[in-house]
Image 1 (cartoon, rainbow, N blue to C red):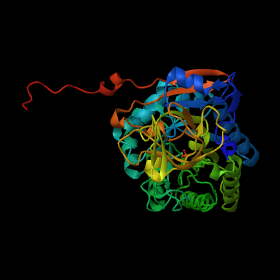
Image 2 (tube, rainbow, N blue to C red; image 1 turned 90 degrees about the horizontal axis):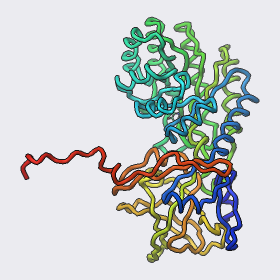
Image 3 (tube, protein in one colour; image 1 turned 90 degrees about the vertical axis):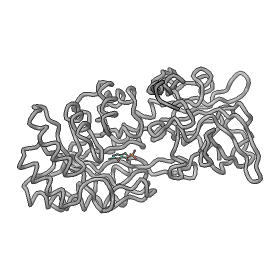
Image 4 (cartoon, protein in one colour; image 1 turned 180 degrees about the horizontal axis):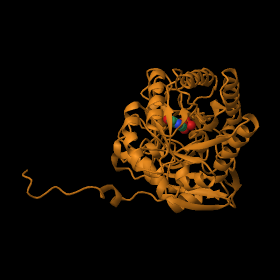
Amino acid sequence: MNERRLELFPPTTRLEKMPTGADHLSIGGCDLTTLAEQYGTPLYIYDQATLDGAVDEYRAALRHTYPHATGITYAGKAFLCVAIAQWAARRGLWVDCTGAGEIHIAVTAGVPRAQILVHGVNKSVAVLAAAVTHAGTIVVDNLIELHRLAPLRKREADFPDLWLRVRPGVAVETHSYRQTGQDDSKFGMSSAEAMEAVLFCCQQDLPLAGVHFHQGSHFHDPEPIGPGVDRVLDLIATLRQGSGWTPAYLSPGGGWGIPYHEDDLPHPSIADYVRFVAARVEEGCEARDLPLPILHMEPGRSLVARAGVAIYRVGALKRTPHRRWLLLDGGMADNIRPALYGARYSALPVVSPLRPVTDQAWLAGPYCESGDVLISALPMPDVQPGEMIAIPASGAYHLMMGSNYNGALRPAVLWVSKGQAQLIQRRETLEDLVDRDLALQESVAV
Ligand SMILES: Cc1ncc(COP(=O)(O)O)c(C=O)c1O
């Protein structure tokens, strides 16, 4: 059981025998115990080899299955900071930014304009202005946004390419909070709106270059992508007939899932997913006599989730009538996913991780919410206060959805590679917590 859990961790994970005889978990050639002692807990670790491996897998699968040009955009919403944006840009990925904040991170990281793609539902005028200034591509979510963009075009010689985000009317199988492709979704345009948008772009001479859709996030079966692709290709054929315009780029978004728990193993591979999508696009274009578009994948989770590991220290233990509680020093403030949509995780002790399981444990955080439980009913060995535990598959949608609830300080983040660890985000400080605050004026009567 515990050995299967190791498969959820980065492929560079090892058990290192210490002089004491205990096995220590190491990742990227770095001993997790040493890192946690040095940087404190909760601590997040990103393993470069795992990130690189996932990119290589996408690239190889695209190269072997799609007979035309391809590209990959890293969905920064999964985890974005300066270092990861730099890694993505150096690996030749585009970086998907939602909102002016993520654009600012990418620009600070030095991501070239051509590699910045801007997403977002209901982009404000300020966000659109930032996108026009810094991005190579803007994915337009709705007609109002398009109308706001048109006047900006007149002022900018170097105007970004525009893609239209459409709703294919089919979602993937996943939690309803993560479905986006259905007709009733708040994201993207209907077919009629897409036609209006294309005609508007032709009339206004806007550089319309692509069509984008995203059916949802964290799915394991690519099957519903098939009808999604078909519907979008039907729409493209109709747009072509009605306007003469054909997109150079087609993006089926991202959303490929990963295993979070040993029960999710074995998990179909990135290559299985890419093969399915690429074949469907190629066959679909052929059937409709459409030229092959540049196929642009947009993964977030499947690139970064497995690379990230969260380390917590166990503080108190409790036994209640039906539960053994391990109380950790982090929880819903750095990982809201279990509370938000019942996400299921697994864990191992950092020292002697493969010791025998005793019984089930509930791993809960320190925050004032009964829902602050990271893992429920997980078979675990005996664990003592002061021990550290590691939660695998923690690289996506944790820190980006993090909060300062109960005054929590956002954790430090390390980058590990070939035995070297580098701090890429420092832990928040108490000063950070009050940095934005202003004292109440003395003149205010109480
Ligand atoms: C438009 C878009 N693209 C890509 C993604 C990335 O999804 P994932 O991280 O599951 O691959 C999302 C996630 O919500 C998204 O909304």
